[in-house]
Structures are given as C-alpha cells and as structure tokens.
Image 1 (cartoon, rainbow, N blue to C red):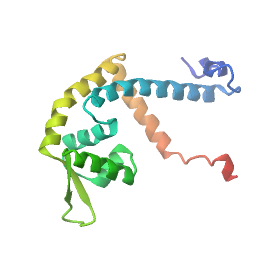
Image 2: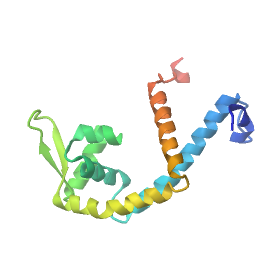
Image 3: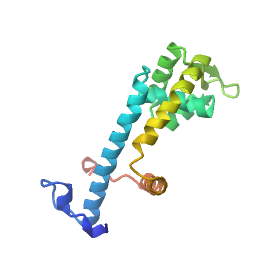
Image 4: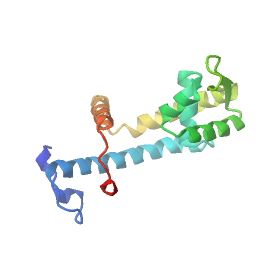
Length: 171
C-alpha cells in the first residue's frame, strides 16, 4: 500500500477532505489505537482476576524484573504522575506486596521493592500474563513482530522529538 492508496474517504464519510499523507496518518492512528485496545483487553483480563489493576501489575512486574527501584524511576517507566505512583505504591504496600525503603545516598528518595508475598504473587501470575500477550500478538508472525517493533520505535522516537503544535487557543 503506497501513500496515495488511502483516500480521505477511508477515514469515514463525515471526515473533511484531507491530503493523502494526512489521511494515511489518521488511518494509522485509528488502526494503532484499536489494536492497542484489543491487546490491552487481553492483558487486563490476565491480571484483574488477581485483584490488580494493569498499572498495579506493571509496578509489580517492573520490580520483579528490575529489582528495587526509586519511586521516580518507577514513575518514569510507567508514565504515571508522582501522585499516582505514590497512591499506587500505598495500595500495594497496604496489601503487603511492596515496601518502601530509604535511599542511603538521598534521604528524600525512597525505593520500592517487592515483599516476599509480592515476589511470590508476581512469580506465580507473570507466566500466564506473558502467554496472554504472546497469544494476543499471534496475529503477526515473529518476523512481522520484529518489524513492527522497529517501526513503532522509530515512530515513537520521531514523535517524541517533535515540538508540539500550538493549540488554536494559543493564537
């Protein structure tokens, strides 16, 4: 499919006419969003039965694979606000799955680490979660998955490097 093969009508009958590159970008955004939502449904289903949200699971998974991490590192890895990470770690701490420890180099900083109970939980449920993701991604073969990884990394890197457009109200 080349740039010219996505017509403005491909994004819907009520859409204003757009040039082919814009129409293609809009279509890509919709397809990417729908694919992400479908795959996320599988990942959420694999953790909700354990009484966890997908973000709580992500914290446990990060600590499981990376070991103790500064709360700021966890926040940046999961793209949540500082207040959000505090709230989530509080909840996990209350359930006995995570604990906070002081950073010896910086008394203002705190580490999050798995408790033995948290480690046991994530070790038990992670394999089924990984299988749910593998299954959700099975619509693409291994070579196509690797190509998608490369393409999406490039897309994300380039998008992150762009300065945001001013909003119409900034004018």
